[in-house]
Each structure stands twice: as structure tokens, then as C-alpha cells.
Amino acid sequence: MVGMVELFVLAHERRGEMSVLNDIAKRAYELPGVVTNYLANKILLESCNPIRAEREADIAEGYIDKYFTGFGSEAQFLEIGSGGGDEARYMMKRGLNVTPSDVSTRFIGEMESRGLKPILLDAINDKYPSQRYSGIFCWRVFVHFTPEDVEMALWKIYDALEHGGVAIFSVINRKARHVDSEIVDFPGIFRVYAKRYFRYYQEEQLREIIKKVPFASVECFEELEAEWLVFVLRKK
Ligand SMILES: C[S@@+](CC[C@H](N)C(=O)[O-])C[C@H]1O[C@@H](n2cnc3c(N)ncnc32)[C@H](O)[C@@H]1O
Image (cartoon, rainbow, N blue to C red; front, side):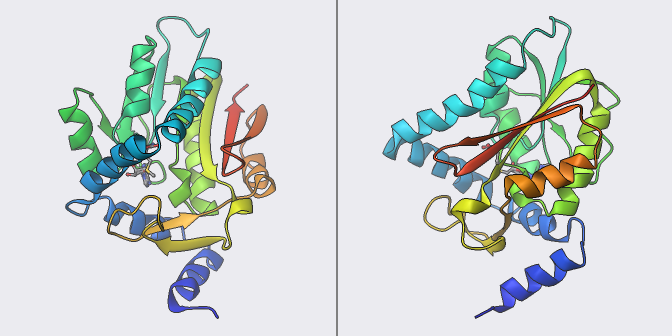
């Protein structure tokens, strides 16, 4: 049976309404306690299941090591939707000049309290800094984006990359889910006490969207027993 939430999501997705559904996630990440719960949850998962946590971190770091290399010491990198800033910190540790960013002022505050210097950036609606980047990293952020949001963000990312620059983003693989999208407080795994909009993608669907933006090459990888899809896009 289709419930009210599914009907709401369907109606907005059919109308191709950009950002309306992402707004639900954005609002959740501004609620008091949600970001604290998100980060506490991450720490809890790390202590309950250190092997999986290490694997997850290794995956993100592996892409950074493999693709954000050989650009020279002046190269600039941007991270979109940095959350608590773990990946940005890893990039810094690797000697990369990275600007962390997030749309949530709560995550910005968290990162600042951890010594990072993030910028406030909405990947869909904002004008990006005029800086051109060698690499843009966007980990577990498009999970809150409709296809229209993804296309808009990809155009902006494309413009913000220098020639030869690389963009990396990850999404939850639709293959592992029972619905295309849902508004949930992520069941069992990542409960933050506020419902967020989640959209799940298949490789082919994303390739269709990416085709509209003139990236020179597109690679896609399955990670974590195909729970995740990771895309690596290069600008000519
Ligand atoms: C699931 S969390 C992932 C955080 C971090 N990248 C990680 O892997 O732990 C999703 C992140 O996307 C951010 N986000 C959601 N909508 C966004 C938007 N329109 N622009 C930029 N960031 C957004 C949220 O604030 C949050 O930090």
C-alpha cells in the first residue's frame, strides 16, 4: 500500500521539484541535537563495529589517495557536505589544500570546533567560490538529492573544476533497497531523531544524468558489498 509519505515524495519527484525534498534533509540537519546525534552515532558505530567503520573510512580515503594525486602543491580541493569533517581532515593529513563545506550551520560549527575552516555552501542552490579546484569530494551527500538536484549540483561542480580536475561522489545503491526514495530516520543504522529525505540510485540512472554534463570520463564502482556506488568524473 502506498502511504502519505510515499505519495508526497512521488508527487514532488514527478514534478521534478528541485530542492523541495532536499530541504527536508537540510532542515533536519539544522534541528538542535541532530548533528550531535549524527556524530555520536558515528562514534558508536565505530566502537560497536570497528571493522566496518575502518572499511568505510578506508574506502573514502582510498579514493582520495588514488584520484587526488599528482596535481602539485598549489592545487586546491573542495569538499561538499563535509559533515563532521573526517575526510577533510584526512585530506589535510595527506598535505592537500582542502576547503571543507556544508549547508548546515550546525556541521559548520562542529568543524570549526575541531579546528577546520569550513565555508557554508549549498551544493544545489549556491554560487560556488570563484576558485577552480583540482578535485571535489562529495561523500554520502547526493543521498539527499533528487535527480534534478544531482544534475544541478553536477553542473556547478563541473564549472568549479579546473581542466583535468576530478569529482568524486557516492550514493546508496538502489539495488540494496526496496524503494526508490523515502523520508526516514534511517532505520536501525543511522538514527538521528529527525526524518530526512533519502534517494537511492542505480548506476544506469546516474549515468543518464551525468551524460547531460560534459565530463570527459565517468567511472563507477560498487563498494561495501554493492551497498554504495562511487562515481569518479573527470573534466577535460
Ligand atoms: C549523510 S551526511 C554525510 C556527511 C559526511 N560527508 C560523511 O560522509 O560523514 C550528509 C551531509 O550532506 C549535507 N547536505 C545535505 N544537503 C546539502 C546541500 N544541498 N548542499 C551541501 N550539503 C548538503 C548535510 O548537511 C550533511 O553534512
